[in-house]
Length: 415
Image (tube, rainbow, N blue to C red; front, side):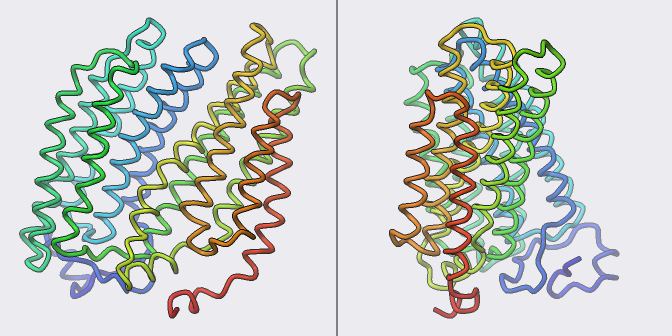
C-alpha cells in the first residue's frame, strides 16, 4: 500500500485526524485505495439501477422518457464519482475524517440509486419525480464540500482553489434544489438540466485557475479504467440474466438467444480490448506537465463513454427479452437499435476522448468511424447484435496492430 509523503506508519496510526495536505503527483506505486474500491462498488449499484430503468423503459414503450431519465440520472452518478476520484487523487490521506466523509458520500450514492427506481416507476405513469435522486446527489455533494474545506485549512498553497471548489459546488446545489420540484421527465426540464450541467462543468475550470491541484496521472488513468470495467461488468450481468431467463422459456427461439449471447460476448470483450489498447497515463502526465488542458477532455468526455457502455447492457438485456418472446413488431427495431446505437456512440467517443490523444491521424480515425457506420447500418438486419460483435472483433485486430506501432510511454512523456 502506498505511503503518504512525510508521514511514517506509526505516526499515521497514532493520529486519527491528519492535515489534508496535497499528495505527491509523482509518487511511485500510487494505486487505488481499498476505500476507493469500496466506493466504486457502491456507485455500480446506482449504475445498475439506471441501466435497469432504461431496459424497462425500452421494453415497455417509454423509449423517449426512459432515455432522457437515464441520461440525467447517469450524469449525477458519473459527476459525483468524477469529483470524488479527482479529489482523492490530490488529497486522499486515509484518515478517519476522510473515511467518514467518504462514507457520507456513499450514503448519498445509495439514496440516489433508490431514487432512480422510483423515477423509473413514475415514467411508466407519465411522470417521474426527481426528488430522491436530487436528495442523494446533494448528500454526496455536502460530503465533498466538507472535504474541500478541510483541504483549504491544511493546504495554504491551494487554499483559494479549494475554497473556490467549495463555493462553486454550494452555489450549483442551490440550483439542483430548485430542480427538485421538476416532477416530470420530459423535454420541459431539459433546458434547466442543461444549464445546471454547464454550471457543474464550469466549477473545476474556474477553481483550477487559482492554482492547479496535484492529481496523480497514473492514479487517474487507473481510476477511469476501473470504472469502465465496472460498467462493463454491469453490462455482462444484465445481459446474462436476460439470456438466462430466456433459455428457461420455450425453446423455439434458442437460435436468436444464442445470437444475442455470442454477439454480447464479442461486443463486451471488444469494447474492453479497444479501451485498454492504449495507456492513458502517459497522455495525462504530459498534459499535467505542459498545462494543455487535455485532462478536461479526458475527464469530462468519459461521460459519453461510461453512459454508452452501461446503455449497451440495457440494450442487450432488452434484446434478449424480445427475441425470447417476440411481441410488438416495432420492438424488434427498437431493441436492435438499443444495442447498435450505444455501441456506435461508444466507438466514436472512445476515439475522440481517449485514443485520439495518442494518435489523431486518419489511420486510427477511419477504422473507428467506419466501424460505427457499419454497426448502425446493421440495425434493421437480423442478428444485428452478432454483426456488431463481428465488426468490433475486426476493429480489435486493426487497433492492436496500430497500438503496437505507438511510441513507448517514456517517449510520450518526454515528447
